[in-house]
Image 1 (cartoon, rainbow, N blue to C red):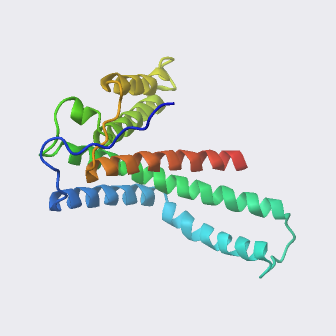
Image 2 (image 1 turned 180 degrees about the vertical axis):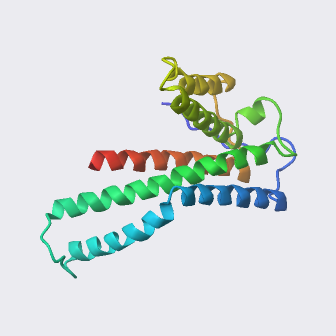
Image 3 (image 1 turned 90 degrees about the horizontal axis):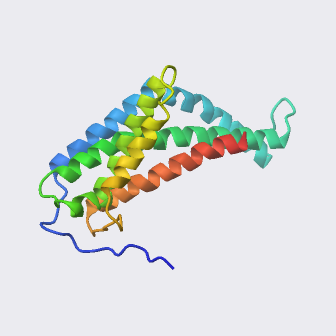
Length: 200
């Protein structure tokens, strides 16, 4: 039975969270919020929040709608819209924070060689950045180039080729924990996005 990676003490000087890291995170979060605003996410949230309130009242029997709708339709519509908006929020913010975490991991002091590459604070945000760039290239080339689907796949293959076996070297540092949080956020966002289509 495979064993989970063991958390090791930091290799080299401990990376301390400082004001520069806080400013990088704030700038990345602001960029993510700007993207959400450009996609009208906040406007949709305001409109859908009223539907969520009415649907919750309908399902709990506290306030019935003026027209008759099947209960299954209310549940499906409520779940689909909640999953869609939550997935949009999580995916955009994770992709906005990934370059920031990668930048912070490369700031001094940082480990060198395989100790750097095998850490979640480097490998996970790098994978997200490579995957996002690959996907944008795929979208850009998909109308004209038959080899376009290979772009994101080659990015993932190149990333894993950089990682020695075993791939992870977990360290008890805030930057590696932040990388793992990004990875879990990405998985949660993809799961929510798939729930949207599963309910539909």
